[in-house]
Image (cartoon, rainbow, N blue to C red; front, side, top):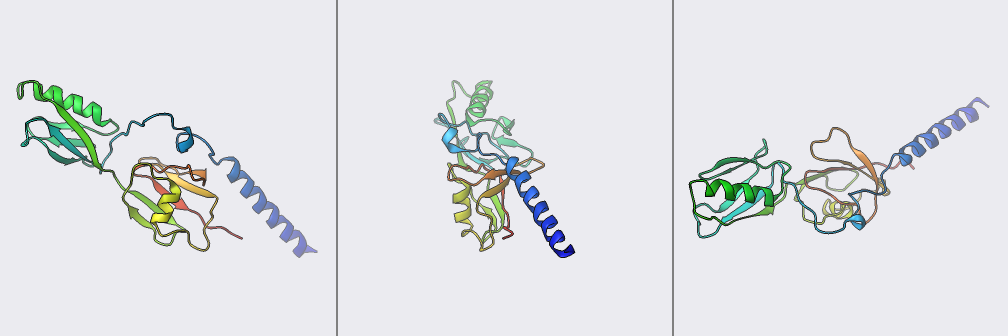
Length: 191
């Protein structure tokens, strides 16, 4: 009799724990591609690599990486804060600084050459660090890591955004997006 009561208690606790985690799971929001309306404004961060092109100035043009402190260092004008800013913002500031005593009417373009990587761990066949590609979804990321392991929970993904202290749980759908610098964790199923 005590054994049946103990089994019923354990089953009840597991059921309660599962239902609590499902209610806290996100099923909509900016991470789901179906809700995107128009082009995104990508914000740079540490590890991104950009190409600066100054029209008719090949010695000032080149590829530059955002440092760990969130700064881009350019010839002549020095450091420009890049963390959490768009390439258009930085191009405008660079153009203004070059026009201030260096060049007459400079034309500047900045484009992202390579994004910072994302990380995937947990119940995938090959966890690790992988290069981000524009428009990537969590299912694409799992495929990049050679798919689910046999014990993987295939309905939920846990994502910690770059710089965030905690991870959030998301319902795993084909629309769930990855952002550069994300850490994705695929949990283990229990049954």
